[in-house]
Length: 149
Image 1 (cartoon, helix red, strand yellow):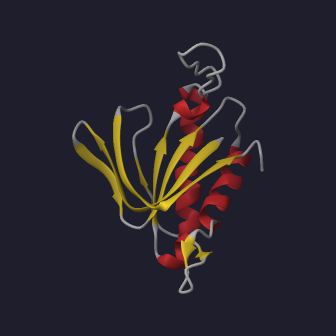
Image 2: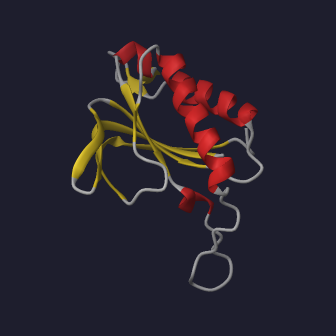
C-alpha cells in the first residue's frame, strides 16, 4: 500500500462538477492499493499517517501532528500509484489491486483514519473520474510505502 501524503492549506475533490469532499488545513492522501495488501497494512498506515508530525510549531520546526493542529484528511483512491514504467512509455497497472480487493481495504482505511482522528474524514469516490485541487503547504509531500516500513 502506498500513500502520498501532502500537507495542504486546502484541498477538494469534485465528481461531475460537484464537490464531493473538501478540507482546510490537513492532509490530502492519495492511496494506492496493491493485490498483496491486507488489513495489517491498513492499520499500520493509518496510525503512521495520523501520527505524522509535519506541521510547524511556534519555533517553525516540523513537530506537530494533525490532531494537535485540528487538521482534517481528504482521502483519494489512486490505483496509478502502482504504475509500472520500466518498459515502454505506456504504464502497466498490473500491480494495482482489483476492485474486489481494493474497495474493502479503502473502506477500512476510511474507518481507521476516522477512528485515529476521532472524527470522520473526507473522501473521493472509489473508481470515479475525480478532479482534485489543492494548495500544498510548504510544499510538503511524503511518500509512505507499507512494503518499506
